[in-house]
Image (cartoon, rainbow, N blue to C red; front, side, top):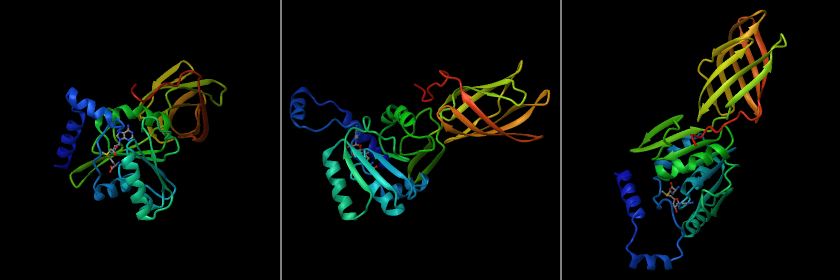
Length: 286
Ligand SMILES: C[S@@+](CC[C@H](N)C(=O)[O-])C[C@H]1O[C@@H](n2cnc3c(N)ncnc32)[C@H](O)[C@@H]1O
């Protein structure tokens, strides 16, 4: 029922008034909203905070923060820092009033367009927008947030970007994603025999496929698991004069360096691979 009301409001909101009314509308200095204000129910806010695992080390951004309820409740419940961004100055004032009343520390509300905001410091982003707005926001989230940052959305998903978790709370859907490290491209290293080995990885969102290329040897990698900065997959590694089954586990320690281990039946070996310049590509579906 609430989703239906939301859709009706959104439809009303996107309705273009006749020319005579447009003149009147133009006289109002109301910023152009991408989404109307509809607040998230308290029980859903609690579930969003829980699903995103918000804790005192987090910096939570609510993009389109409305009356500020998500940021205020998250800071109150967990001690996280919070930033709410809303384009509508009336909402920002309301949120600041609510913040004063709540007496919570470490929260601020900024007036601005969520598409232009610097969100790079956020470890958690909360949104209640529209599907079309989520899709426009998707490249910004994947491009600006650190790997491992979490995104939680009320009611609307991200299209082809599969969720990492999903909940139904009081008839509302909540969607959750972890920003994956971008490990696309060709990664190279030298094995203990001094030979050059490489893996080529194709990645879209958190899903990836890869091929291992050794000395005149090429094989598909097993399922590649990417969770934040952690990467794991099975493949083959050189041992003595042959290639043997191996499990790779690594962290993306800087933009172009994977550091971890290769485990085979013969032991655990340190592994460091660097990305060949120019082979990293976008993973955001654009
Ligand atoms: C559905 S409400 C959600 C409010 C709050 N996040 C919640 O869940 O209770 C969407 C909010 O986004 C704001 N908004 C719409 N377009 C925006 C934009 N381009 N930049 C920032 N805020 C925007 C609206 O003013 C509104 O307050």
